[in-house]
Image (cartoon, rainbow, N blue to C red; front, side, top):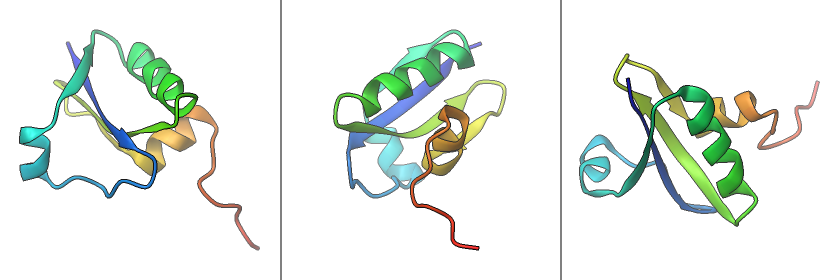
Length: 77
């Protein structure tokens, strides 16, 4: 099982499926490792745009932020 982490600079737009075919990615054997890398990127002024796994897992930037306990914007009730 592998998980691919696609990343870019902060403020980058979400990549389309066609753009992902041309993007570089970092590959991990567990989702925990992929999420660790996403957190590492955030500390380095980059952002994980997407995590995709061979098992069908697909996390967009919002889901990654929630998994890391990071909110993109404060919620207003």
